Image 1 (cartoon, rainbow, N blue to C red):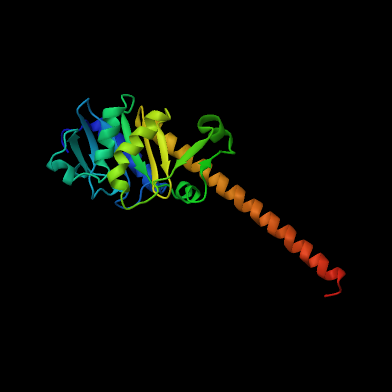
Image 2 (tube, helix red, strand yellow):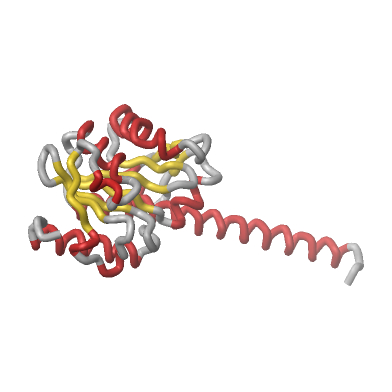
Length: 215
């Protein structure tokens, strides 16, 4: 993609590599875009390999859907919707961080216990897509409405991933990292509590057996 500024290309390449290595993107899953002007944005193609992004892995799209969308990420229309509806959005991502995805399956919200998560994120509602079969048809409108109505730059969709936008690529990456770190810490915290309770119950059971003369 020769029409993309070299500085912007290097920034996109570095961010996608970092997010892939942190498991926020999977092979051919996930998307990242950057606004070029009020009518155009650049986004990864369907076949993009995020660990080593090349210029050919990017495509420039306009908000008026055309044949170029066939080559772009399947999330392209949602990215377009966010840019059209939210002026503050300069870059957009769809990520699949594993701890956030796993935590979203059994909780209605994320309430961070770590310092940075509690300070910046405070409390995160988890959006329920209800059914996956029709999600891709509904995602543009529902994600866009959620972001606007809740005055937030991200949404966690249960079992699906994070949609987020930022004022720049570092702000975007920071947002996703904060969410994933908080979900990871909560998961490990809950696991530790579960193991501790199990240990107490196991110890209590052993003591009871000793008293009853089983040993």
